Image (cartoon, rainbow, N blue to C red; front, side):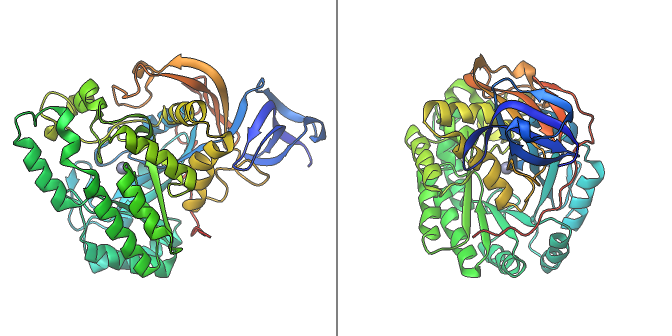
Length: 457
Ligand SMILES: [Zn+2]
């Protein structure tokens, strides 16, 4: 090691394997060593983290920024992320969605280009194109996108942008040839439609407390099962998004047992809230799939422990209260914001209350998402990795306030929640981007990251 520009001292470094008291040497945005302080050469800048934890930056593979159903720009969304210890997110580029209108002829490449042209985040990002049209042309686009570092694609089985199982199977065949990842939002469309109409017509149907019955767990499990089978038949890599229920997690687990390339996530809010939140917060808490029962929450934690669920993401959907409240639940826009709170909230629930270890936390929020989506320099603290780091005080207890939102969303479902664990500083490639909740980097510090084809062995 010749001279280095930065040395982070006095911390406990957490990786997916272990925790160790060590200094982290950084040069030109890259980690050059993790070792006792005395072995490093003199650094231009020394940062003493005062006994706190040093975690890899959070890698959130599921956020909605600057597009359909999102009022965050790359700037505001990434500021919320940075304040919450997130150093890379993967955002959705919707086929055909152009500032408020659906263009039925648009391509995935157009969507990716539109995002890359406007993006000026403070943290790094990647893109998952969302396939919304069943055309041969869309399949023809996939190889070039993969070559450009876009190695995963999103589909839906429900709502207006749904694809048929037949077409999803064709996409998996193409993805299998390429080695790329298919992600699917799985709820059975027809069941959800029928149940929604049924719930709406009952006497108490208008209450937000009735909302979960319109999108039942078995509808989620049915679609999770069908899609996982389609992926297994094609021998494709499949990533199930936002698993909420024991039934859906069981469906995924049963397809995984034959060695298929099936992975899945849950989201922070499904690990801490049950459906009683709809009584407390009304439409503000509406997202799809819905919050479930306490039994489901416990089952999700079992599945996080046994590896069926290997990632915790946010599904950050920033919306104003004005688009959520004031009408029956079926007129509410769906989705909740969470980027700024995911690490402290999940840390508090998993580590403080449920005895997960720090390496397990890092695995679920940093290392696994980076590996799953082909980001070899992210999610780990080792020589050669990007110096994306979070200084985290594991002991401080405080109450979350939506007034501190960096997101354009003017509320938080976590508002008023007391948690233990605070993000003190966030570094992206060696640059301090957030310091005690304040953003100290310029928009545009973040870069588009080309992703490799992930190996899932
Ligand atoms: Zn989502």
